[in-house]
Each structure stands twice: as C-alpha cells, then as structure tokens.
Length: 61
Image (cartoon, rainbow, N blue to C red; front, side, top):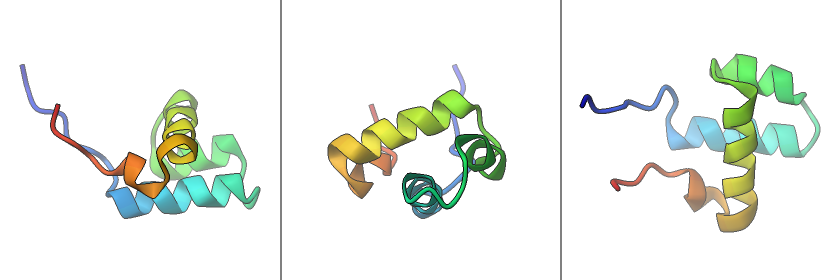
C-alpha cells in the first residue's frame, strides 16, 4: 500500500482552519482553497478545537 502525502503543510491547514473559525471564509471556500473535500475541513476543525494547532500536525500511525 502506498504512502499518503499531505497536500498542505500543517501551517497551511492551521491558517485555513483559523480563517474559517474566525468566519473570514466559508466552509466551502476553505475546502476549495485547500483543494480537499468539505468533510476534510470539518475533520480538521474538530481536531483543531479538541487538540489545538498541534492536532493538525501529521503523525506516523
């Protein structure tokens, strides 16, 4: 099975999530900017709200 590569760095994901949470951009706009599905941005937001910015840093499982 191949290794998945993140499209965006943790810093870029944090910037997008924070913009969305500050209501500067819509969920749809955030997803388009990140070139990901809306559900992915929702998952990022949940991680950010539960774990803070460190929740968006890629980890090896």
